[in-house]
Image (cartoon, rainbow, N blue to C red; front, side):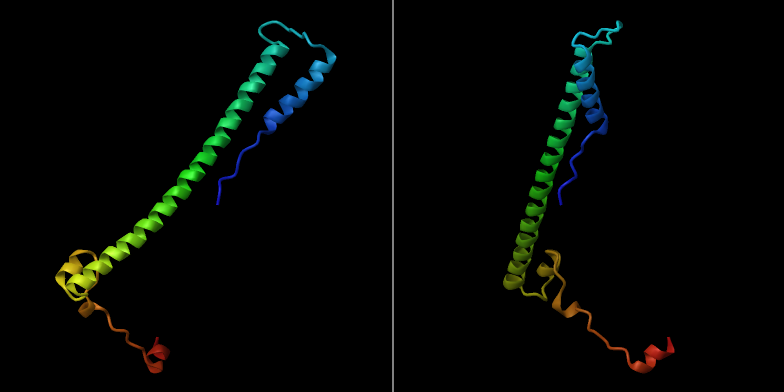
Length: 121
């Protein structure tokens, strides 16, 4: 499942506002850096950061999918390696146990509880 990409209501609101302001006048300057050009530059900077953020999320999704695929491949390979130990040394050998397998002689036998035991509890 991919990560949800982000949108920005603040950015959308600023884009609507600047469009309205530009329809009034193109050269608004209130002093102290409060100009339409500065406003537009800040909107563009925020837009670029949002796009970069969403690109990074996509890259993280790709890396995550690659990791999941590598884990599945490794799990399959580990299983095959353990099976190889079982074939070569036997599933009841100490070598098989050292490789991570459970000795056949140590399998726990299933015991079924009788209905009388279940009613007591």
